[in-house]
Length: 330
Image (tube, rainbow, N blue to C red; front, side, top):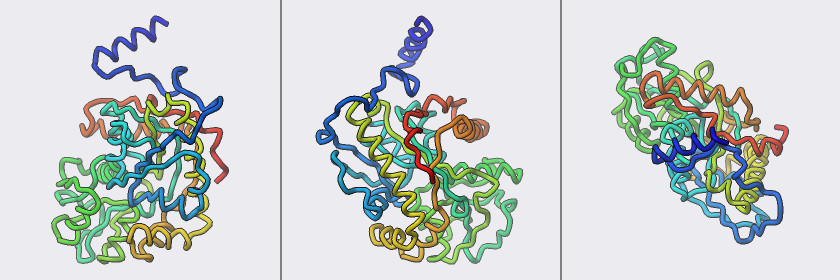
């Protein structure tokens, strides 16, 4: 009891509020009666995830007792900023955005995990580029979204080929701006993910210099806020919505063309881009376990080593395993 009080006082002294470890006893559970008709679950979406389109195509938007509100973001980091600000209750992001959010002591919690293949996680170069090996990236201008999964992929590629992060000219750009810079010849390479890798290949003739295999993992995480987990009714809605999201991911694996058509229609992506992107990122649902947390810690430490983060981040403090029992067989 004294140790918990001491820890709480230390956090308060830093002005961070009463941040508690995930899964603490003061967090609400979905046990007991709740009135879901009074709940609005606010979802942060992005073109690369297209949660709303995915659930609609899979029929998983039917029959929700709670209301849904949708907001569109450019990538994972802005979604987590919105979660921290209390504007969003749920978002799906790649392996890196939670690390930067945790470093900022954002009030986020990782409640679910999935894994996709790594072919579409890539560093692409223009079709006219003379670059043939990642070892040739030294001194080059490389576009990447800061704090995205592509940011870690770039870091890992450079490290494996003996190039310091400071020895490339990193251009921090969101996907739309990165595509414009890439097609306009203002950068030498672009670290991207799907559907942007396929978009660059099909629409500009870009070539994959190196993909994610052997450099990173394909983890994706489902995120909520600490405050949402203290709301009994919202926890019940989150549990239901997470189940719908997981089922929709597995549905897409088995209905490839149907999902690609819906994704293209709802986002404006050309069908061939959506079709290729989805083939490269079929998903499986995984449990949050010690191995997943340890791998996320390894990624976090890599950013600390190159001083992209101000110090060591205890990433385990941002995971909550309460929904592990609802993970389906994928």
